[in-house]
Length: 267
Image (cartoon, rainbow, N blue to C red; front, side, top):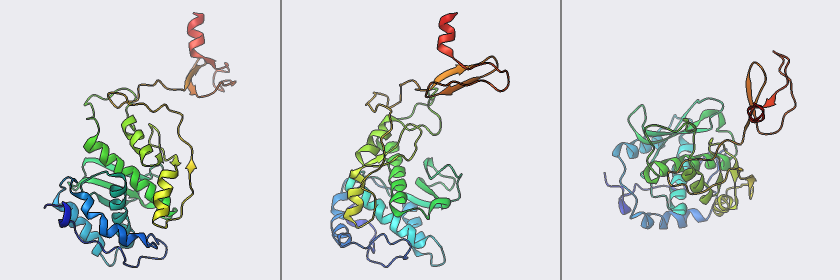
């Protein structure tokens, strides 16, 4: 199915949504509806199943997430339009994930065979609207990275775990006004993000959180080559890592923790 230009499915952006969602109390929505299609001549083709699933989700009358998913699909288009992401149509779903996971992007194909799949954690759907939208944008940037970023190496470097977020990702997120680090933590947003939300009458703090202290540079391989800022400390029986100087004793062996580098230098 060709999803370019005028063949995009019609979007009813004026439909009344649930009061507890309330994404679209804005006069700018009609302007967006009229202008966004012309901007997408260069978006890549997606797969037919993604559009079919989207239509299915928006049509389910007895699904508790119907109103929310409609809003999120519109915001997917807004983010693509405003930040020129040019992504195929993603699939947005909801599952109960670990309490430490706000949302998840499934790289490659999901368990159902779909591509570009975003899952939001059911546990956090009562959070403020601007934070839900921030998570959606975070996952869209994962999709952007998968399409336009540097290919991942089959043999991952030691510091690259499943949670690892590359500098390519961190830089792109910063361009879109959201703050994160190599662990993918939601650190807040800047005025870039809040200005966009205010444009569509979404309430959000002008800025929230603070940038991470990791230097963000454009490494050729998109990886984080900076060594950890944590220092290794040891007693007789174990090792620990800390970001600040510590003055503590091990409860097991009774010895004081000493900085491992200094111990090696003494030897």
